[in-house]
Length: 162
Image 1 (cartoon, helix red, strand yellow):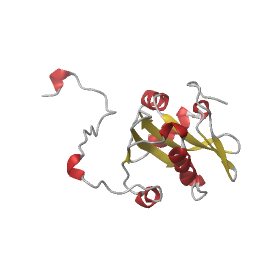
Image 2 (cartoon, one colour; image 1 turned 45 degrees about the vertical axis):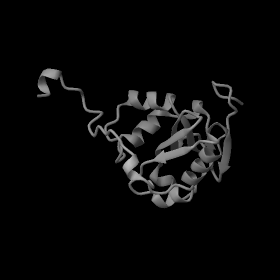
Image 3 (cartoon, rainbow, N blue to C red; image 1 turned 90 degrees about the vertical axis):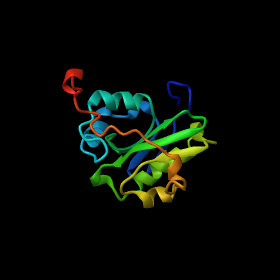
């Protein structure tokens, strides 16, 4: 099997679940349903989720009937850098090793080998990511970010902004 770019697709079984990087298996509605209620992207529009998934390497977790129950989204140039984001497993499927299996597939992915830096942001999963070699930023004074907390709110006309 191969993806649209010719790269071989990968899949692994974890009990009653399949972990796969096949972009055709991603269910944007299921991803949107979770992200829309997550602490990091409440109110995210469906079209933003669809665009994000199209522009990313995604690894999903699927229950035996094919229902998507988890995701790891990877934003990368596939040469030097990877940003790990939108990691989730639906509550009723947690405790099965799915997040670890998805992250292991990401770390082993042939398109993500030899990268100089991997990055992520988390409020509550430091222990999980630490198992994969992630640690707090060593030199925070070198890191900057631009955050738009209300990015998904409807834009206001320029006349109303002052």
